[in-house]
Structure formats: structure tokens, C-alpha cells
Length: 447
Image 1 (tube, helix red, strand yellow):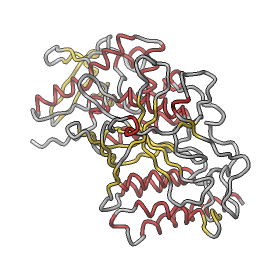
Image 2 (cartoon, rainbow, N blue to C red):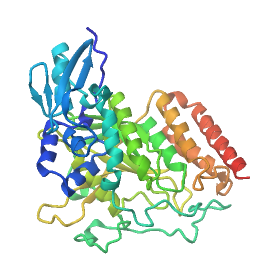
Image 3 (cartoon, rainbow, N blue to C red):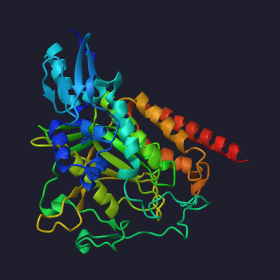
Image 4 (tube, rainbow, N blue to C red):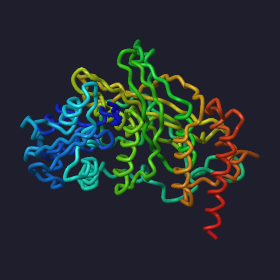
């Protein structure tokens, strides 16, 4: 019998041991810390948490699974566990129950996709998880960012006038060496940029190899060129534990502002679902440095370290996570191609736990795609639509350097990342049409 329930993204769900760990720490700050850092991955969210926050209620026969023509019914217990009425067996999580039931119908089934397969009172549990995310936004939101980290209040932070120059209010930010940081200091500016260290200089080898598709690089670069404000997105791919190789296959731009607490959770949940549908795992993230070089800030280092801890897996499993920084504009030199730097953070030594993690430069191989995917085309249109009309949306027809416009600058950077079927320049024509049309609409609206 054919199995139409395709879901290879089970590593994005909670697992029994994760649920037991969170139950052991209980409520309060520890639980908030766990749930806040696992918003996108979905790890750590348990039925017990949804019950304690009033999203679900315990009850008999309120849970069900419909799979290949067969229906399974379960009771939701007050402790968040599930009792299957078919055998009175108790399961710790939706995933555990789903995979057990599906294997009874299809013994070759390897994933359960519990949150997408199990229904509570006729609706998928994923819906209730999203409701919980929204409710937790106030309690579990990251600390308010400093004024410098928020979206700029004034547009045109980059020079958009005749010649390439640095505006007086935008200064070069020198990067410091990691060895100069010492122990953590509450007075240390979190926006301090830190130079990358290299594994070879430390007598070490890079912990795993990496490759990234040109379609992925193309979309990242396009996204980071659209605005003078910082943008962020996530990276989907696959991890091969046998070869210790990380394949980054698709970029997922976040169509929300850094300070937009109301929409961030919804956007991230949509991305998580998109990865799951494509059989991809969350393997990293990217963000832009529109006003400075592609060295990470201390805030970036801590954020990357949190992702590595949250995604490293449990027991014998391991899931790496990498960060990418895209610097589309060189403030002192008219360089067309963006700087794209991958990094990983080496944790501080055990005997010096209060030191900052060390940002390590990661080498990667760019794999040229054979063709442009519809996903990339859609994302380019959606993300340009999102920023169109905003005060920080670039004026692409304005001069960038000498006789070159910002549009020519963008196209020149993207030209290095085209798939094989776009060598004729069709995509660049699409980009020009997309951005100049958006700009025309924006100017028309402002009159």
C-alpha cells in the first residue's frame, strides 16, 4: 500500500527525552530559556506545556490519528502524556504515538510527524502549537535590542548620492581580536565586532565540511541587498553523519522586521513547516551587515552559540548549525560582489566558562545548481514586495559609484551565483524588472 504521508523533517519535532528534560526543570526561568531558543526548531515544546498554559485540556478520546484509512484514538492525560485506547499504552509525546500507530499499518514507516499527524478535537496539534507560540511571545521574547540594533529611524544610512562615499553618520567599525576580549563584562558593547579565528592557526581541523547551493547564495544575496536595515533568514539542508558533511540547500528569508515581536513567531513557524514539507532540516541562519564588514558582533557570537546548543541533538545524535553573514556594501571600496562569510563558534574552555565563544571562519564549497527553482523565484518576489515602499528600501536607480547604479551593483553581485540554465541573463532581467517596477510604484505612491 502506498504511503502518502511524506515527512522527513522529524528532527524538527520534540522527542521523548526532550520532553522529560523540560518536565524535570518545571516552570519558571529555566522553562522560558528552553522554549525561547527553540521557537524555530520546535524542539522542547511539549503537550504538558500546552496544558499548563491553558491551550489544551485533558480528556478522553480527544486525540486522533487518521492514517491510510485507519483511525486511532487516544486520551490526553493531565501530565501531557497520551494513552492509546487501542492498548491502554502510554506515550510521552505525539511523535512517539504517531510512529507507533503508523508502523502498525506500514512497518517500513520511519517517521511519525506527530504534531502534524495527531489531531486534538479534530484540529492538528500544529495549530495549537502556533497559538502557544503567540501567547508566549510576551513572556519568552528576547531581551529588547539596543537602539543601534533596532531598525534605523532614518532612511538612507548608506550613501545614495552621486559618488561612492561614507556618510558622516556611518563610521567604520574596527574589529577586535578574540584574545583581547577576556572574560564577559556587562559594560562590553554587544555590537563590538570580532575578528574570525582560523582552525589551521589553532592546529585544528574544521569539524565538518560544508557545501551550499548557488540558488541559496543567490537568494541570500538578493534579500540582503533590498534594504539598508539588517535582515535575517534561515537555512534548510541535510546533515550526513557518516561523511560529516553539511549540505545547505535552500534559504528561507524572514519577511518581518527585527523588532516585530507580533509576527516573528508566525513567520518562523511558516518557515519550519516549509522546511518540513521539503524534507529539509534547519541547519543554519544568515543575516546582513549593511553598514559594516562581515565579522560577527558579540551579539552574533552569542546567538550562534545558542543555536549550536539548541540544535546539537540528544544522546548519540548530532546536528550542526552554521551562521552566515552577508555584507552587501563595502563602505570604503566600490566592490560589486557581496562578502559572504560562514562561521561557527568554538565554546570557551571548561576552566574558563565566563569567556566569550570564539568565532571560527568556516570554509564551504559553492555547488552550482543546474536550474533556477520556482521556490527561489517566488521568494524573490515575496521578499521584494515586503520591503517595497518602506523608507529603507533602496532606490535602485540612484547612483552607487560613478556611473553605476545600485541596480547594476545588485545584478553584478548576483551574476556570480547564477544556476546553469540562467547564463543567458534571464534572471537578471527578471531582477531588473522586479526592482524597477517596485521602485516606480513606490515613487508614484509618495507623490
